[in-house]
Image (cartoon, rainbow, N blue to C red; front, side, top):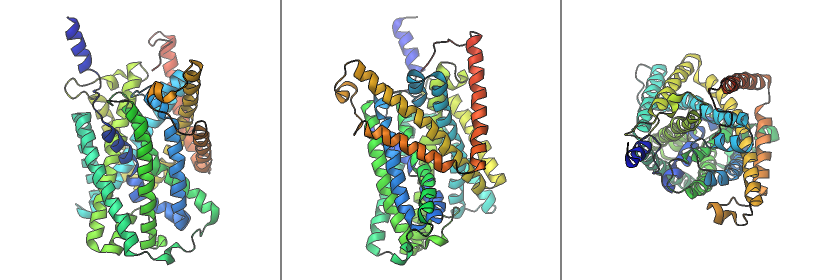
Length: 463
């Protein structure tokens, strides 16, 4: 086979570099401004009262610090494996596998709960066969549609994502500004902290879940045109969702008594009906649908498929996840497996109750992501030290991007992560749940080590 032919075959079996800054930004924003904002923050408001506004802002800046602390790694070492690649190189294989598995598997789990949230919204418009059946029906339909969209190609998926995110941010901006202009019921803000500091603290993990999706940007490394866009997108996506969330929360609490808000009803739909009547409720329901959809497109389907792709290339995952379709340049088989896992989770949520499954999985997902991020932040610190040891004085000139306020940013990121773990692991159920999936991971890692000893995997392999 000629050199040109070999090159063509190689290009056809690798991921395609075609994502621009705006497409990457949309992946970050769309993975954040999702069902956590429109559905789950109802529980956050009930937990803390109006002080949830401050909890949301606090959580937003915590998450921004974490994202920026990983920015230099994303730009300097772009990879679909992201945290797996970085932690394997600067810590060890155990940490690398742990960071990648927790991030990607949690996204798949959230895919089930997010699909249920989307199905709940759709059932409001089209309650086919009753509320329960309609929720399940629409969850299955849209989860499948977005899987096909990802299979069709990253250019198609990212352009659809960009369009939806622009519409979503536009709706939320108009909602926030119009709400302030229309006038808010200031009585709804008193007492501001009815449950004291405990209520404020307990709201933070819920708000953090809503913010955690921006790290999906890091997994675009193999498909971005310019790696510098990864660092820029981490900052601008974070700033976008902080502004959108905080403004929206002020309007929601000012329009609807927080004591009437729940997990099963979109707060923003209730607030829009209060401000503008039934038409406003319909518009905000559309926004809620878009939000859940963008989370599924970029978070629950795209992200784990790319992380698994990188892991499969070196044998840490079954080789099926590394298979790339020559026409669409996407890991089709991996996406199909992820779709099947999501279907199982949707059915589980329908059988045992969306609220119970949603709340339990969200807490464990936050714990898993936070542990992985702590490892990635430490890897980022070691990467910066390595550059300094090599005599690099101007980080920005060397890799194209520089995290602001170093070393303050990674210190804040680590402190925020530890505090978040403390808040999440606040009961026996949470701790036992963490121990169960940690044991499952250790068993999987043991199998990997067994393969290394048997010569099935190279001892020095890492991303």
